[in-house]
Length: 195
Image (cartoon, rainbow, N blue to C red; front, side, top):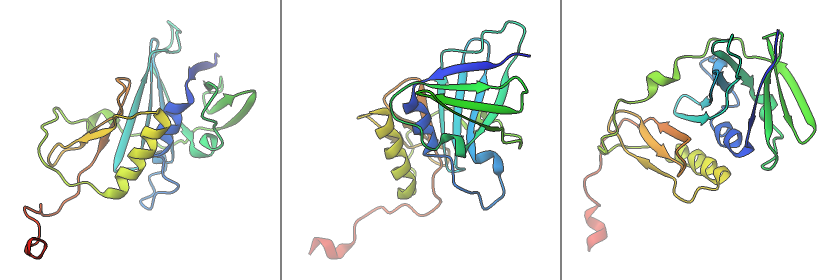
């Protein structure tokens, strides 16, 4: 058995962490952590609260020619206490049941979240139309916090009608999808403001 480790800059984990909920009323335990997909040549970190999904593409994989893709979900308690400086080692332990996060000489381990994670790629719309959409302002707060972790000054949402809007953080390797609200579009300001 082998251990598999990737080294990630903390700002990506902290940005993703903004979309790991504290609890899920619908019992979707798989949402309560950071999804890690390790391939031979690259890796993905994914987080979603069911309304916003953030995906980060890391250009380093597990480099084991005999091993296929490895998937696991890091529980949210391992994400607490991460510092904004100092690389983070994410390790899939050789028992294939636990993971370890290490930063600046401190390490913490826990069992993976066992629930099956859905195929996050199915949420990605086929195109971005720019069609008008409504978004919950509370979701924009989390997006702004993620952008701050990334040091991004060019974060914005491109609307996409009834499909998820494209969240740009000003970096090619990370993006988000925010689901629109249902509701009537307001087409004018109230008459009383023009008097």
